[in-house]
Length: 277
Image 1 (tube, rainbow, N blue to C red):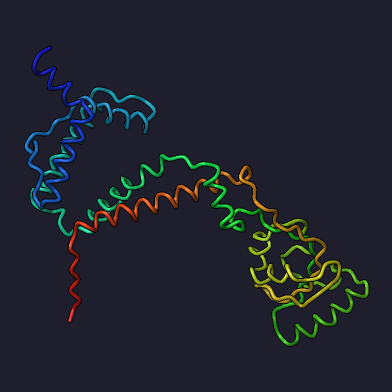
Image 2 (image 1 turned 135 degrees about the vertical axis):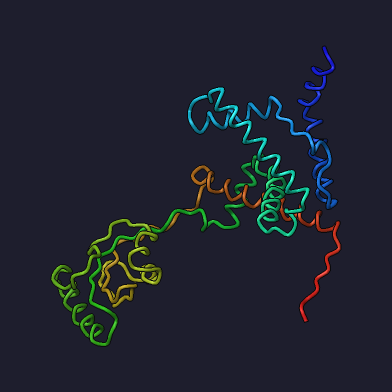
């Protein structure tokens, strides 16, 4: 094996990549542009393969030799501009750069948590802490009659309409024209709320079943309502809500990892805040 071959093999070692990256980061944090090979732009086989793979993923075909040459030339241009910008200190006090580096640090802190897998016991603990979050929605079956916008006159009309309905009149004969269904059958609370508002759904939970009641205020006005059925949300089971609970577990775990990493980093700094006079 020639010396060149040995050097190429050496550059492919993951430990070498780690040490090189560490040296660059150390130099950047020390306030100096990285001097490790800064005057040499190496486009190795791994870099070329990555450029070709990105092209293939975007265009569903491998790049031609000319296209690959263009990708390499653009990569060299990026590296040249990037290194020269670091040399000139253009990254200093740049909010975009600061936020980009912050996001990368957050990704590093959360990467281990994202790769972890929770146990069923951990997921069940999340469900037990907040069962309402994972429970299925309450469903409502009811009839409604729209009386009109909320006003003293409409409330008088509501009282008369309520008497008619309780006396046997049909809801179709009493309701005012409005693009809202007269009959709802097993609709989830969120669907009803999207049409009539959260306060209307809250009223449905307390109304007696089997008789006309009201008036009930919604986002569009006054209604008379007859609830025929309420299907309460059952206790959530892990097998039914596993994906939602696991998503929450991963988000919580990543957030805790980010907070812990930040506290460790901050311990190495002396923070001085000078407020304007």
